[in-house]
Amino acid sequence: MYNARQFSRMCGVTVRALHHYDRIGLLRPRRTSAGYRVYEDRDVERLEQIVALKSLGAPLAKIREMLDTHPLGLADALRAQRRVLEERRRALGRAIRAILAAERYVKSGGANRSAALKKVMETIQMEKQTEWTNQYYGDEAREKIEAGKGRWSPELQERVSRQWTDLIAEVQASLGEDPAGPKAQMLASRWMGLVNEFTGGDADIQAGLGRMWADRANWPADVNAKAPAIRPEVWRFIQDAMAAAKR
Amino acid sequence: MYNARQFSRMCGVTVRALHHYDRIGLLRPRRTSAGYRVYEDRDVERLEQIVALKSLGAPLAKIREMLDTHPLGLADALRAQRRVLEERRRALGRAIRAILAAERYVKSGGANRSAALKKVMETIQMEKQTEWTNQYYGDEAREKIEAGKGRWSPELQERVSRQWTDLIAEVQASLGEDPAGPKAQMLASRWMGLVNEFTGGDADIQAGLGRMWADRANWPADVNAKAPAIRPEVWRFIQDAMAAAKR
DNA sequence: GCTTGACCCTGACGCTACGTCAGGGTTGAG
DNA sequence: CTCAACCCTGACGTAGCGTCAGGGTCAAGC
Image 1: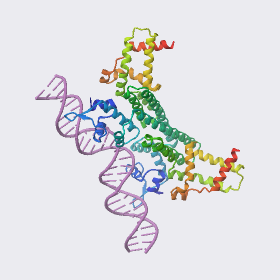
Image 2 (image 1 turned 30 degrees about the vertical axis):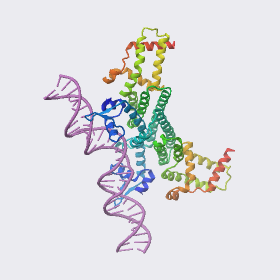
Image 3 (image 1 turned 60 degrees about the horizontal axis):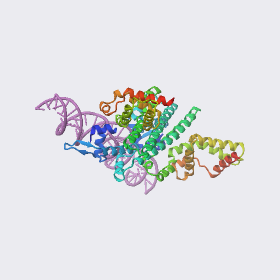
Image 4 (image 1 turned 135 degrees about the horizontal axis):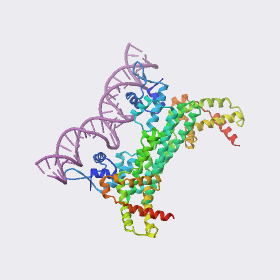
């Protein structure tokens, strides 16, 4: 038996928030004859779950729905919470690596400010994209998200493709050369250098980049118009050159 | 020269957001005679800075202020951004450790559900408390925040103190015993066990806990009323016992 | 010259999760 | 009985846009 003030301080939320939860039916306490709110111990438990789910980013309406349909075990809540945080931490790691790459890029006389910042922004966006639903619900759903995560925004694609134009043109002009020869090797290493520059050496992002190029057919038309065409022979030339380098 | 639509897609923000930034004076493009918005390349740069600062959690008004007073170098922005992310990542690490501790606690027949969840919530709160201002501005301000970060909410203090009541009573009953004796040793190890349980083994949090006890005089009166008093001799007994254990 | 469709503009209201009064009832101590 | 200390319920404010509604603009085709 607590009044609103005690209860709010006990649970670390404001009285106004309790009023709010009451009005939207998320947490309805008993009332005295005078209309005063009276909270009990079981309300503590529910409010804790509310706060926990809220910290996962769930909107209050969904929280209500979830708690009403299938109430949440403490262990489940903790596991879900932890998984969310772990995923966020991984995303942050990627972002930090990306920024470090951008910093190096800028310091080494980085000509293309926008490209570097774009990179950062893109990586940051990945952070935001992790929606709470996917985090709360099982692994299947999450994997779908993961798969789609490599998608790049059209703008970034545009920027990137501009960067590549020169290199591709040069490769195209060198198609006749020996893939193991010095010129081809230099082109291949420039190619990898560009890839690394834009991915911060992050394998996940590189995979995304690969998918992005593979998916060029589905790009918006206006982007495709400006983007350089990588014809199969160009790809093959570079791959041959990289294979030759390994031998 | 881009129109609003092109520009928005280029930079990954919505047209509506651009209108908003225009209205609040954050990013005012040129206009055609018909009143159409026209963005130019320098606007790209400014918008990038806006987005970057926004991702730090800065409110738009502050962003405007900052960009108007002292425009931001790219390198500075990147460094600030990275520092923020690194701090967040550290906080996440603490939170994850805390949750793992709570999970272990619950699994091992955790009697006190609320205490475990409280612990988690508290740790999560630490995450939120990292305000952007402190992250953006220099280290001095940050250290102040760090110092204050160990503060615990009154509710948690209340919970914790309930946990300790029994143990303290037992210690008090054993004050006459030999600090090196088996009983004292068991009490000391239970003491440390409780500390570890509540801190997830995290040294930062343990330090916070220490400060919290040291600061008991300043606790809210109602909490102090319910909290067990740790008298100096109790402290000394435990410290003697732990010292004896080291020998 | 006029229509058509694709864009662009400016309000204006909606949304989330509350913060912050204002105005008025309730409760317990003196 | 009074008075301070609480409690209640609207009602409006906040940030950062989303989402129409109503209306101007522009280039193309007839």
